[in-house]
Length: 466
Ligand SMILES: [Zn+2]
Image (tube, rainbow, N blue to C red; front, top):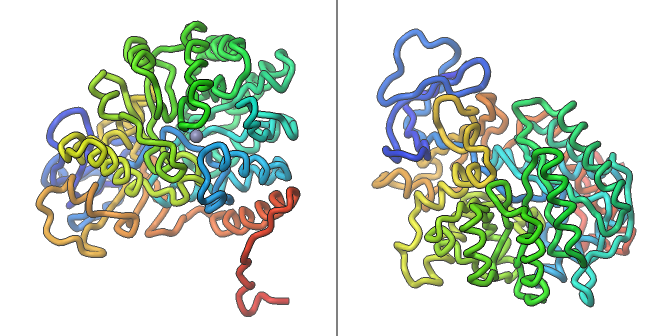
């Protein structure tokens, strides 16, 4: 139990006010139990964290992430999507299930210390594939056992990050029965092992975009209904092979999967008809502003989607193409690219982009009853951001100061379910240092299988050298 006092609260709720100066009380279950302006009523149980006027905001939601990728930052630095994704596939060929555990743990802890408290995680498929430019499909290089997937789930759970676990069927590379069986196994493992409050559910890793047959969409629909899960599919992300990509939209539409449980990731280059169908079916769109810029993918017409009534959430994507998992940077790149492309600064407001990276992401994933805002009954996933260290000057508009002027350097505390998980840039997880070391060592080993060697390796600190 903890009570935050003297807080500049930015609740990101559906209603006004956009901010208030007051307090927030968290109960023993890690849930927000009460809040209000001014001072709290006397006699609230538990400890007090006096924020001295710092901002208290909801933890960020990354509605589209690949948490095993933190060891591949800076790769293919000047490539578009397919060149970059091919490089990533090659570097993963040498990875084993234990490597995936450490890659994922390091990725999750990186999110947490950067203020991201919930993530939709596309697990690395057990079929490690390399993109084939000639056919625009994925070609299998290695096929692993299901523990390749379940160890990633173990890492998510051990990290303390709330996750949606997304799993690809790999139906083009594996016999049909085996795909369904593996998905069921992963689902059973998740339900049995992940603490209930951390488990945000399962999802299909939609992969029709790289499939060669419409039957993949039917199999995804079958999996969604069998397990009662949603689906997020990367779609029309890049300007490469655009006709091939667009042609597959009808495979999804005809399979009948579009709807409130379905989201398109990226959706940078849709046709007008595709946007209309997404709006009509109440499907969602997940926007990766930093990744789309890094890979030269394009600028999604996010303001147009919102005008069409489409739910839009934001994601930090892969830690290899959003090389810094910085939600503040992601909000601003998104905001500035939208404003620049329309030559109109009023096209997207600061409070709207903040909402897309918190409550809007939760709504797009169907999780807004639990996460995304500071409201009674929701998980107490909270960020303390101090706009005086470093100083950002007078606060003329708290939301504008938070979105436009604050950065990771101002983030002082990250709470998940009322429990402190990071302080400053430091993770408080007992395995944090080991996870970073294991990530580097294991990623170098995995990449070496295909001949990739780091350009520079830091010498061991004095005193640890043999
Ligand atoms: Zn992605």
